[in-house]
Length: 241
View (cartoon, rainbow, N blue to C red):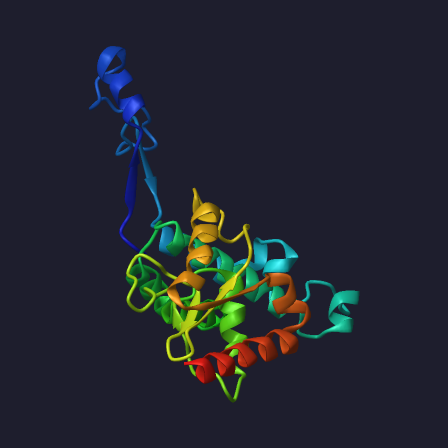
C-alpha cells in the first residue's frame, strides 16, 4: 500500500481551536489516532489506477468485456465495442488526473507499473499515450490513428511550438509546419482553456503554421478520412516549405 496522505480542513481546525474540544482529546475510541479536521486520503495516482484496474464494480462501459451472459446488441455488432469504450474511459480518467495536476507523471507511472497484470492492460496502454505526451482521450485516439500511417512520422505531442515557447499544440510536425488539434470543448474545458485554444488557433497562420482541427466524433466515425486529410496537409506543408 502507498503511504497515506492527509487532507486538512483549515476552517474546521480554526473552529476547533476557538471553542471546540482539545485537539489531543480522543473523540472516537474505535479510531484513537483520528484527528479533528484531518481526513486520511489515498494518493490520487493510486485511486485512479485502482479504479481502472478493479473495474468490476463500475458501470458496464468501464469494463473491457460484456457483462451480459450471451453478449449484447452492441458487442454483437462490434466485438471490440466494450474494450474500446473502456479504454476511452480509462484514458480520460488517467489523462485528466495529470491535466488537472492531481498527480505527477512519475507517480502515475509507478502505480501503473505496480498494478496487477490481470486487469491492468488498459491502464498500461493509456500510460504509453500519456508518456508520449497525450493529455486527453481524443488525443490518445489521434495518437492511435497517426501510428497507423505509413507516411506520417511521430509528431510532437503537447510540446512548445518550435520558436514559440508559450504555445503548446496537441500535435505538430515541424518540417511541414502543420498543427493538428482535437476540437472538443469537453476535453479542453478546464478553467479558461477554451478561450486560450481559440486565441492560439488564431495565431497559427500569422506564425506560418497550418492548423487542422479534428473533432472526436470524426476521429471515431471517419478515421480513414481524417487520416487522409492529415496526410494531405502534411505533404502540402512539405511542398510549401
